[in-house]
Image (tube, rainbow, N blue to C red; front, side):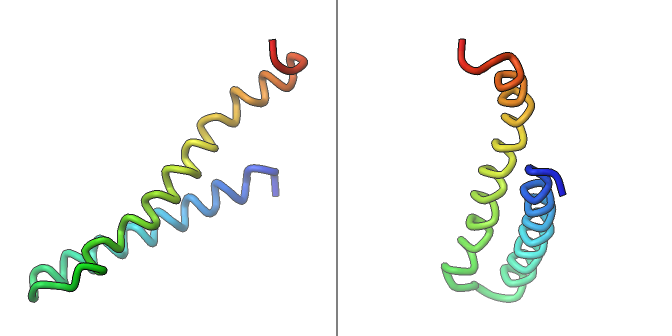
Length: 72
């Protein structure tokens, strides 16, 4: 697997987990008033997705800088 391949794979699985947690929240809110921890539970995978998304976004720019010989 490529060096950043594991970040991309983790980002995909985090997206699946985030979607599942949001769906669980929707069901829980339609049934009754859920506890606060359930309301805040989508934030954990969301923050991890932001971090992995920013890492994937920066990857091509960092590779160009390394190929050009470092910082200018």
